[in-house]
Length: 454
Ligand code: B12
Image 1 (cartoon, protein in one colour):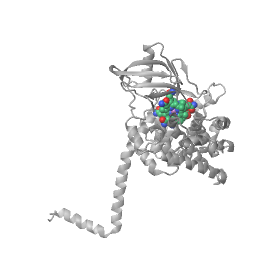
Image 2 (tube, rainbow, N blue to C red):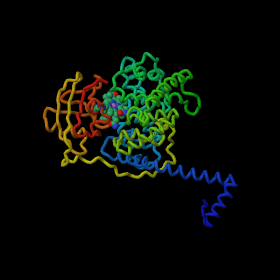
Image 3 (tube, rainbow, N blue to C red):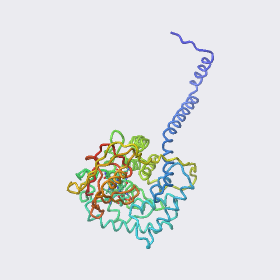
């Protein structure tokens, strides 16, 4: 069978054959094609990221307290709105000053102080403005070190690691005693058991990955720290070797937890876990996880600004360690507002059935129940409000946090951090992955609020 070709085709073919004879030209064409294709691929995967970036920027206009984690994410992004970032930084600095001042009753927690410090460094603020926050954080960590020596839970390691990371990124030398809190004698430390999967409490797993990821980032920073302007290592070879050994074990645990769909832990711990893996150069697992995160973000799973602030850096291939490299020059000042798809109010004309609520104490005894009509787009918080308005015996209280309202008391029973208990949210036996403001119950669902140990 012969194929007829027109004269135009023929001359193209002749031209093509000539090019084939010239390998230099062919290579050029090939390179241009690869470039074109990768630009196209980048554009398509970058656009959703830019719109998430714009949505995070939009969240700085919501009537919420300024959150340093949001500022950090905006600073690590590829696109900026300098005017808005400057405005937000001003708010953060005022908040920090007033929290650190002796007149204010509330002292910032270790993790919040650490986030403030990272936010200041991400905006290239001089050491002078950070001085107070640095000494405050150093003293908090020293106090916590004493605490964790006697404590048998490891929930505080998230905050502790964030504190070490913030000092380290700011080139502050960490006391060896504080550092030894993260580089333990293997079998003596409870968190090492947790890492090895020995802690049976399933409910601790949801925050294990985030904690382990924060530890890896802190350890990585320490192991690579150099004395500024000298090029010499900040810590001895012996310390660095111990730090690296612990870090490698933790990284391995995080890697082992990546599932086929790319998630590590749950979708919300995946963001920080990928930062930890990226810091160790694991591009393959990062890419797999990033794909998953983008899909979930497009399904609206990252509307919570705090969750979005933990997600965005890793989508941009950044980790908190990159904060130390930000030099605040030549940044793209091209980020535009994005109308946020803010959640609409529940539609009170559209009832979708009922939700049952059971409130259990530590022994599993039911202390109160409620059956609440469910309307379209109703959050768990709205369901609890409804239960309160139907039944005077049903009551609850919350405490504001960077993640939203944290449930502190239900049916006159108060959970307390000092007593290491909290109100755990479950659907049947499965813990919810979101808080009361973000979770939207389904019709017929049975939500359990159970006083639990952490
Ligand atoms: C430690 C921790 C806890 C501890 C906190 C106690 C303590 N004293 O340390 C405990 C075990 C109590 C806890 C509980 C819950 N947690 Co939690 N927690 C964490 C973790 C690992 C660190 C939080 C932290 O220290 N933040 C640092 C500083 C800056 O924040 P902070 O405001 O000072 O800290 C307080 C709040 O963060 C608050 N908090 C902790 N978790 C949650 C969750 C929600 C929804 C809210 C509103 C507040 C809140 O407790 C902190 C200490 O007081 C994060 C991991 C992460 N990626 O951040 C998960 C994380 C925030 N928790 C999460 C969840 C889902 C919960 C629960 C809803 C689980 C459940 N099914 O019951 C409950 C909250 C229920 C309630 N009563 O409202 C998710 C939130 C995801 C989302 N999109 O909302 C995260 C991201 C873990 C994950 N990957 O799934 N948590």
